[in-house]
Image (cartoon, rainbow, N blue to C red; front, side, top):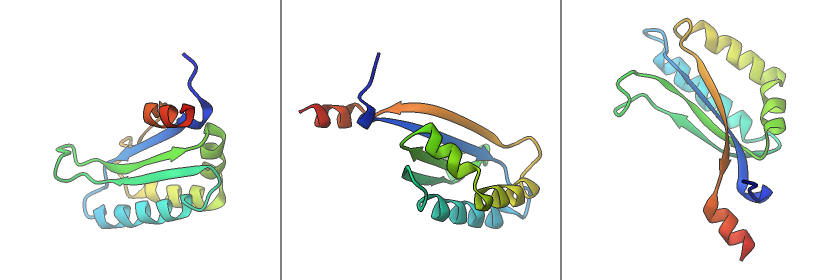
Length: 115
């Protein structure tokens, strides 16, 4: 099914486990990264994901909504993003970083824009 372009988004989800004692630093990095991403073209919305209290695995991360995959990729390849993620990889559990991407459709927005 084809969805209206103005109701379709690209979503990137990143989850990870901080190393013991690094929870606060990982949280700070998430804040920094989200503060940076909000300034990038195509950014729509971003969320910091906390491990407590509803996530017994203790994973933390971020969910960022973009206008397009190209916008997300462009932001991910900036020097700032690469530098921050490099630091992050040193303070999270090895092999714990999972990144997923999705196309998201907002039916309410589509309904509003077609009215």
